[in-house]
Structures are given as C-alpha cells and as structure tokens.
Image (cartoon, rainbow, N blue to C red; front, side, top):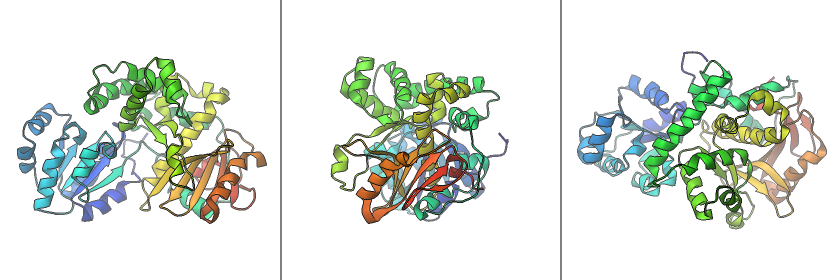
Length: 414
C-alpha cells in the first residue's frame, strides 16, 4: 500500500456534518482509520487532538468530566470517546449553552447506537457517521457507482476479466489498513490474531462487566464458521456449552465493537419482519479467515467455505460504499417460509427495494434467480431491480428487472 493516506468515502459527509452540527461522531472498529480521518479533516481546520488511550487524559475525564470538558480548546478531536461514557452528559451541557457547529469531532470503537444512554444524551446535537475498514472502491481508487446502477437497473455492458484466484485473495486480505500494509499473508494473519486478542481485552471490556472473556474468542471463531447463516442461538450455545442467553449477550457485545453483525430479515409486512431470524455475518472477511486459519489458495479450492465468505464480502462492500452516500440505505436478507432466499436486500428509506444474490461460480443459470423472483413478487411496485453477482465476464439479462452481473462490477466498470 502507498504511504499516502487513501481518501475515505465518508470524508465528504464528515465535512458536511461539521458545517451544521455541533458534534460529529465517527464510529467503527478499532484500526479502521478513524483517527487518521479525524485528524486529516480536523487539524487543518484548527482542531486539537486528545486521545483517551492516553492514561492521563482518561483519568482526568473520569474524575471530573464537567471540568475536563470546560477546559477543552474551542475545537477538539476526542479519540476513543467510548472509554469515558460519563463525558457525553457534559458535552451535551456545553453544546446546549453554546450551539456552535463543528465544535467537537468524536471517534469511538464501540457502536453508540447500541448504547441508548450514550446516543440519547446527544440526540439532535450529534451527527453519527460509520467508518468501515477499506472498501474495494477505496483500495483501487474508483467511484462507488454500483448501488446507483443497481436501483436504476443500468449496468455496463462491456466485458471484464474474471477475478479467479484474485477474488479469494481479496476475501482473505480483508479491509483493515494495518493488515493490508503487512508485507506477506503470514504477517497479515499474525496481525489479525493480535488484533482480535486486543479488541476483546480492551474494547469489549470497556463495554461489559463480564468478569471472564475467555469464551469470546471461541464464540468469534465459531461465528466465523457460521458467517452468512441464519443465527441459531441454540446451536451456538450447544457447541460452546453455554446458555442461549449468554450467547445472545456475547453476540451483542461482539456486535457492539463491530466484530460481527446481525442482518435483519426483510418482509413487505414490517410487523412480521420482527419475528424472523437475522443472519449472522462477520464484520470483516480478513478477521474471519484469520480465525478459520484459511489461506487464499485453500479458500479457492474449498467451495463450501468460499460461498459464505463471498456473501459476507459482498455485504461488506455494499455497506462500505453506502457509508459515503447522502441517502440512507438499509440492508436486510430475504427468506420466505418455502425456503426461497436472497442474500442481500437493499432498501431506500421506506421506498424502493433491490436484491443481490451472490454466486461463487463463473456461470449462472435461470435457477439462480428463484429467490429474486420471489422477492420481486413480494415487493410489488417497490421492486427496483435484482442481480446475481458471479465471477463471470459479462452482464446478462434474465427477465424483467433481473441481471447477472460480474462481481468485479461492484468496484470497477469496463
């Protein structure tokens, strides 16, 4: 990787938020580039930088949050703010006294949206933006055009090269900047293993009062082997010999630090959506492959492992591209009672719906569109388009509002 910082898709949205919002929070997994982005945006505009990974700053904020905030510079970046939850109330009081846009840039390695007392304390005063590990668009320097093309149903018609073994290499590499900077796959795997240990010992402990965290690495490894599957708490509990409630709580903790995510089901009836099971996905395929001990060459051969990891990889790429868009998009999966399913459903507000099915193969057939046709029927007029992503060379129409599209088109156009 180049030593020059790679521009982030969410960067423009950070600047927009600073122009009209007192507090801007950039949250995402540790080591995803939050500090780099905050300093790139803030320091040229006069922001001072303080990190709560510094013991002195952490202790001062814990002991006297009111005084700590009162003594802050006019514009300041507060890094890893989830380590001082009491600070949010003091920030709220300061903002309420003087509502000036662009006063605070916060970064956090825990999802404040899952901690109501934190996010609620600054409701209406704080813009919240998600920074993911690198997308493929960011890594190759292309504009994120796929989601717009998906809803418009307009895809490039040129021929592209198959990714082949390169697809497995991208999946195994993941998107964390520090991992991608390692000179070899072995060094990258070592970085991921160290990262997982540090994440559980530091950020998970900050969120939880659990005395023993020994079970979490085992659960995370098991989650890696279950990525892109319907979440089955009983099965996970049986494998680890824990209660369902313990597994539920631990999954929530891992989701709180962005190591896993639960992808909710989509249904035309929003009430019925609540009684269906989510899919469990790992937060990054590089982390998943490191936990599974699988290398790119092996993944290319093991089609049973490639399919679920590719599905997670595609979901990650779509969500990472969406983070840079002004229009909010929501992601789901679709599965009906007869077993028809769609890997990823993308919804625009309460409006149009698009479906993405993922196939780890170089060919595609009419049979691969069964789930998308069922989604098209369920969504009715709201259905914008559906695609099967495959490792082929050309875009192929498969009926009304349906196409097979090369996976490479996610981040490249011919």
